[in-house]
Amino acid sequence: MVSKNCLSISKILRALLSSSSLSFLLLVLLHNFLLFQIDCLEQNETKLEQQQYSSDPSWNFTQWWDERAENTQLYSEPVMFEEPKNQSQSSISATSIPQYGDFERFGEVHYKPGCPHDHLPDDRFNVRRPSGDGVMVTSTMIKVDQKYIPQTSIDILNYTIRYFFSKPRHWSEDKNYMRDLREAIKEKFLSFGLKTAFHVFKTEYNNEKLQSLYPDKKRQTATNIIAILPGKYRGTPKDEIYLIGAHYDTVQKSPGIDDNGSGAAAVIEIARLFTKHKCYFNKTIIFTLFDLEEEYLKGSKYFVQQYLIPTEIRKNKAKFNGAFIMDMLLAHNATKGSQSLREFWPTLPEFVEEIQENGSRGNFLTAWSRRNIDHDLYFFLEKNWQNKDRFPLKLMDPPLPTLSQEVSKNWSKYSKYGTFARSDHASFWYPIERDTSFRAILLSDLGPWRRDMNFHYHRVGDNDRWLRKDNLEFMKNTVDSLMATMLDIADGHC
Image (cartoon, rainbow, N blue to C red):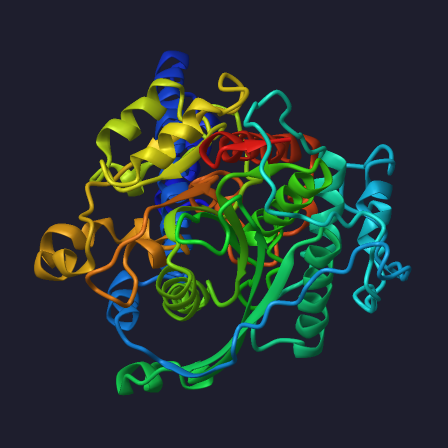
């Protein structure tokens, strides 16, 4: 859409062209007009981007901060882990979902909309317990010698996203579908040999202002999915824990392929590869898929408050070393000027300058970390990052404090960093308990600020258009790099 000023200039130019004006004057006017037209287009692009962000109601830092400290949980079911069945215990195999061993022999994937995988049956989640690729994971530890690092394939990532995460997954929509989806994901984790559980909870807004603003969201029922790969010291006070997590819900109407089918599929794939290749770790790894991230991070908020702190830390006496959270891994655009940076200039000017020096290309993945607090996690991630030239890793480290009470006391100083709390890592940074903080890093493609995802973020356009070869290779690099990181940081061996 072009502004009225641009149209007026265009009419003037046509009038001049129809007259007998001197050619030199026409050339000067044409030159100035073209410069003005380019400026008009840039201004309109800026307005469209601003409209995109201002019309997105999904994030308000002040509201999240106020609600973060409130315990709006009404009811929570006990987290009961289900034991996996090994092959000798059961000969039942999946009737609808093929084993991942079959996925690896799937062949060439058509990286365009309309490929055969788009027409997966709606009842594909009606499965019985798969057993063919189950691996019983024990706590036996062998000598740590990182000689082999598993790697995924773009075919498997493509299939997993299309199969599990290609339809809208909002808490208020198609509850039967969501029930079947959760069961299918649980069965998949169990088939890997992992103890798996649902963390079911109900919440409400207990703030009268919020209730009046969001009457349709007053009460919600949600489910986190937890699977555990035990380390050598699991069940003892020597146990140390790392978490790999992502949210699997979406906003209304959006298929959520990038946000966040990509992150959820990455969690499943890492769990699959670690168990398939019989990887053993000194330290425990918890795989978690969070619900209600799109509702102000409620799923991760209550995971930390109702499971991590009371069960793993207080009851089991384990040490929590940190979380790697993935939220949007597919948006990749290596063209010049494809990365919008206006949002980050006031808070991270050095980061902006670094990206601008490379032509503002959206070819990188970001790691969000509190400066000098979560750096240990980033150190291992950067050390093990693969294909650094093609898919760079960029650190975004706002100078946020350790504890939430410091933010509250200095609100005018820290509130400008609110956008850095807009995913599940923030529930670990600033849990309900104000004297507690956990290390966490967010891995993200900066989709809301990256062309072309910025116009499809939280919309129906977040669909299979992002499952092209280049995007899947970008995601694969993140999955492979995080697996290498975990083998290093959690003392693993495959």
